[in-house]
Length: 218
Image 1 (cartoon, helix red, strand yellow):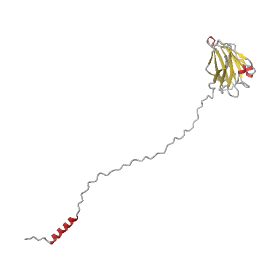
Image 2 (spheres, rainbow, N blue to C red):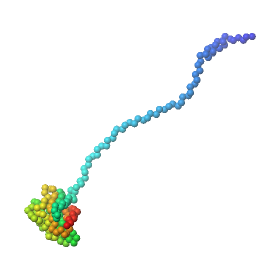
Image 3 (cartoon, helix red, strand yellow):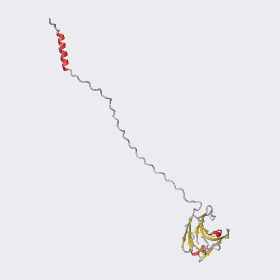
Image 4 (cartoon, rainbow, N blue to C red):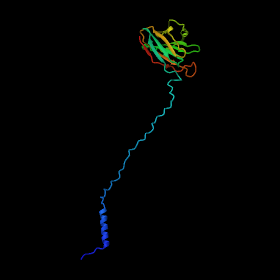
């Protein structure tokens, strides 16, 4: 006995067969990996160049001394076998002084020549010191006027000033120049200098500023 397939079932079977013939199986792809993050290198933004501002100019401190004379410039130059030329410079000074001192047993003996600014012209005096005791100043009028000739000599110390060599401070240059000559070569001498100004009142000398002594050996 043959079993009968109903026409409806037969139609369904044909439809399924037709669908089966048109289906394409696609293998499932591998699951994608975690998303890749791209890191961009930071771009450095150039900063504007910083130029330091110019420092404000400041006044230089006063390196001089406006209230009193500064240290004088004292130089000694040999101009003969027994003669030296001394130059004393201090533009702020109102008085200039040279001191010649003995040595050894004569260390307390000295001779001082002082040039001081006056009303009309400079005044020049000399002063002797014997065994530490000072005498009275002697005015050297001929040297002041430039009329002296020959030598002006000390009595205690073997030294003289050559009169024609004296150049007095003039025109505010503060420079005193003169030649000293020895009259005895046996006694060592020393020559120093000093200057003073008018720190407060005219013609009232302030403290003296003294240089180092120059050893004037025989």
